[in-house]
Amino acid sequence: MRPLRTTLLALVPAITLVACAFPPENALYQQSPDIPPYMQDQFDDYVSETRDWIATHRVFLTDDHEMEITRNSPFEVRPKTATDDEPSRGVLLVHGLGSSPWYFHDIATEMAKNGWLARSMLLPGHGTRPADLNLPDYADWKRSVAHQVALLEREVDEVWLGGFSTGGNLVTSYAAQNPEIAGLLLFSPGIEPDSDLLFLAPVVKHLWDWIDVDPEVNVINYQSLSTKASELYYRSVSDARDSLDTQPFDRPALITMSADDSVLDPIETLRSFETRFPNPVSRFVWYDDTKAPSSDPRVETRNSNLPDQQISNFSHLSVLFSPDNPYYGEKGSFVFVENGQEDVTLPNDLSTIWRSSWGYSEPGKYHGRLTWNPYFDALIDSIEDVTK
Image (cartoon, rainbow, N blue to C red):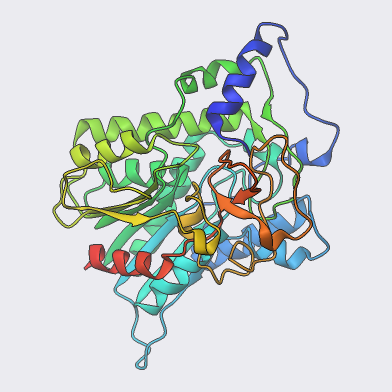
């Protein structure tokens, strides 16, 4: 999926020429009958029924259907203790637009090792086919998050919320309005998009069906984007901003951001942290090759230019994944080679490619998307520091 700013800019001239667009003749762009139920009384039932729904309605991209179902289904990781004590702390993790619960596989696993009950939910419209993002309303997303919070609160005394990109917006607005939430973990939160045209999304959805249609080759992320999906993201941005404008978030929060994020506005996100997240325990982790432009002592910089690892800078999604992740990791089975480059030939030996954010290029180098975090262990340490 291309950055939203790029796709919206490309769409504006077309709106003046055509009143409506039709999706390609492919099952990927034909909607399922409805979204799956998400108000089950027990988390185990939610997982089981969602898996069954995905198995029935997913358009599979590989022959390994079980792998695709698992990597798109909600899950939990429980801590293992010598005494089998029930965990007292829990975290609900919410993925981003077009992605899947498996985006939090690595973070949930590590947090469980540190005593957390970690759950990763599925936002309605995900896990099956890109067209299904036309089915939910924003209210479905809000209700599904609120319901999963309620289920987690039954089992633990202390609840934290974590979110990536759009998921970061959803948990921010919920936590801001519910003071019983202990704190936030926000990974590339989508509060400050890098687009001045996002306000057009509610109008554009009536004129055009699809902003971006790309080959679907990634089993844990939609590559295509409908105008309805962009409107859902717009609603999440407005909701999170309104909540923070009403009152700054005074509980602890961890925020991470790449200075080269191609989807969001990193500087505005940093400024938002400085003014809207005043808790002294909060931390902002800034990935860049120069020190973050901030005098706030709570801001930490980690060098994103690592030529010895063939890494030029960090991408929107890379912070979430361990280098050992079997799909997105350093030796993972999926290589994000489509990276917005033109007139550059993909080398036959993929081990020679460099990694970066979307659209970055240098003469004589082919750049694929960076999909793992070389500082993943340090990220887990930061989570522990903030949540103490």
